[in-house]
Length: 202
Image 1 (tube, rainbow, N blue to C red):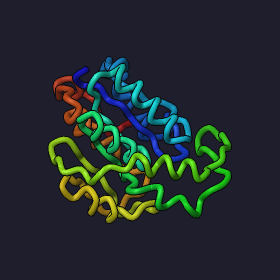
Image 2: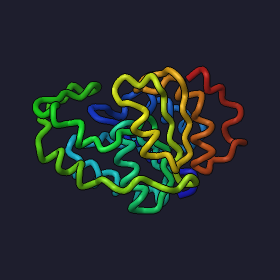
Image 3: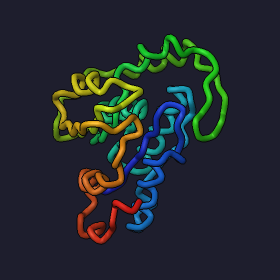
């Protein structure tokens, strides 16, 4: 489905996150809600990928928009299916970061408690793909003020892709709404549909 978007939230996040809500609001205003999926992902990577595969099947050839850990998932799926991906402060090799975080976790939005195990880490490692080399299919949005991930890791990993690096900001990506026109354009949604929207009010 041309103009469809699959939003992939990050670690311990949810569809209630600010970026997801802003995207949902815009797609509703455009009358394109049916062309958007924002699944509440299971904490286990294998379950999450299964959910995302189902969403891709429903949407056809969506633009994958992945935030943080969602960026890692999006990269795996974009490479598997030949899809376009827009990555927002993406995690690179997250399985290498989780060793010190095994044990009880809590979702920031749902308060769900769950156990991060070695099996989670193994499953994440299984999803790793070589660094993408396609500047036409990949946009990577980074902010240097990301307090959770060192943006330079993604800058290096995705150096062959189209990079948009902003000074400052944070892991949540400040000013996301103002860049939504660029995302919609990348998804193949015509500017005539959204030029009347004031994205700064989202």
